[in-house]
Length: 232
Image (cartoon, rainbow, N blue to C red; front, side, top):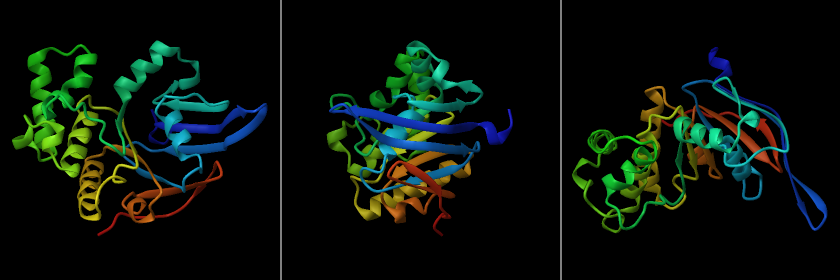
């Protein structure tokens, strides 16, 4: 497949009906992402960026338009196929790490592999490798409450990476962190992108958005191209 067609949205609309009135959340979104790109979607609260994230992540469906991911027409897939696509192609990273509190770091990272039917020994090998990758090899047996906010987010990143997804989809990944820890997480994102990981990051913070190699802006459901390069 051509690099330019790795990810493509054309004419994406999303409408909701509230009190018998149509609310237009996304308006004719056109977006193409190349494999290995680090894209930031920058917008204020209420701009439609979370709705766009849900559609990108196959958690919601558009009212109109066409969404193609690695050659598959997403709107043509049934619920089971969408679940498989999410599991195989997309790694999710949220503002709050959403770790299960009673599971250790390595058990949290293993979860996607359990759902994928991977055997115990292979799960442990992959999860260990990913925690080592994010610098938490010595914290594998710690519970989330025994980890700092930045360490918890690193566990969440390892969990998102462990299934080797095509896209990392990050929703305000530094929103719950202090500035220093946020910079550390962004440095990790830039390193992952340098290794050809495709990253789509949703944020309201221009300083965070500038870590991406490309920035698009969304306001009132309308997407426009911006600019931006990774910080030195």
